[in-house]
Image (cartoon, rainbow over all chains, first blue to last red):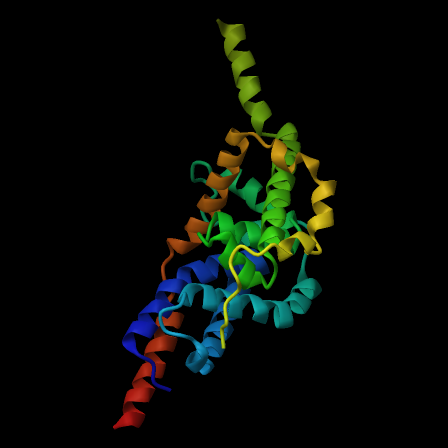
Length: 183
Length: 74
């Protein structure tokens, strides 16, 4: 198989984002990388159907998402565990500043319904427009907007619920209270 | 073939998720700070992976294919 250097560079350029998206879908780095690999092989096998000048990244994201939907979702359900495998597999530097908060965020993110999570990631992190995200997900633009809104609302709920238990918004309130007692 | 979707059409009004919108009146109530903070954390989680760059298995995959192609072409 022969691919142009420019196409190869475009594909490689999309890989970091594809991995981040895949991890959000699979909840596991190793499985995500396998998913990316399989998506790339599919893309390469169908490279003739890619139209030069159109959005390579969106094309690859679409292939990866469709492959995940047809193959991976079943496998994920079989091995999914309820207590934060997603977060565990990603937290490589727990000592880092802000890492606890991000771990909490990842856990909340993993609790979102899949369709909401993918819409939020595509629009809020991958940098796709609502229209591009709609094409990737095979749905209407209004549907993407609605999913993103619901994802944000649910995340905000999950984050503040967890915050009551340990270190969320209340942590700051407590700090203020302790501070005022001293003064 | 990609014929593209007509821009600005209003078919999304009939989307299956439209009814769900009604169930989530709080969606628009998130204040700007909350939205900004969620966005920031989302990008931090995403960028943590992006910053890892391209693992060698993928560069090898693409380079390998290209080398094969070159050999076949000669």
